Length: 407
Image (tube, rainbow, N blue to C red; front, side):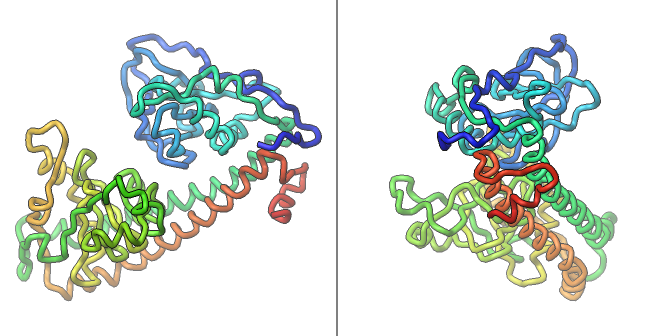
């Protein structure tokens, strides 16, 4: 961060202007809402879900607080959220793997704190403060408290947060719309393919193995001893990249052309169906671009264009069955490629499948377009964020659009 402090801003320590891990009252043994780490998606403002659990310790929070993952790799992956799903003055809790940040009345703005927490300057200092074993390093609270940064006046904090929130609100709207569209598609799928088979296969239908409908590919990770195999432009899909995504546009890791060529038989054309089959079983996504996956994912390359969305929805509808198939009495769920290929699929005649594809494809095209918009808005937000937080771009009262004009 630049040493030059913008006019009207003040250099402060985070612990002076933010309450860190506030001490709320929550009796041990009481059932309360808990946020598990998996409820935080990378670089997503919203908590995805709560679970109900007995409180026996951990950090506590309420609406308006910011939760920051303090362990590796969750912090590096951008797992930071703004709490807004509790009822009234309800208190929720999480494990000590979170740091809770809360505004100080009259000094800091709650939404500004969230955007500060996802800024690169804060994340960089937090990551550098990590100590512990290599697989489970943790951010040190004292380092966070002592972190110095330039703080704008409260009205400017609110203006900055308003601009960034407007982008996140639009992103959230598009995510909700995509969820609704996918639910519509699943409703149609059930009407066309689940309800007609409740009392057995209708005339003209047959049961075939999944491998008859598409090529089955089990992913693979190139040698980690060859750094030149990584960091290119070819998406390398892993299970965390699939969470909440119909189409996978962004991946944490990527392969170089050299790395992809070492296992070119693992390459997936666009809109192949990727299904997680180890540990976390039953996630289903389609790749937006030519990609490869790791070995925890089995993918289907449909033999015919009009199989794509049918197979995507079929796999989504089979989550419980996939988990049951993967159990096998072992501690870690594992649905191997051979068993995956043999999954029985009930299919009608091709003209029926083709008709369904024509009816459903517009829904998936809208989801695809929405996801492109989400990527654009996220890029704009991520471009604005450091400029606003450093004061390179200023927002004055009633002229918030100046920040866009000055880029």
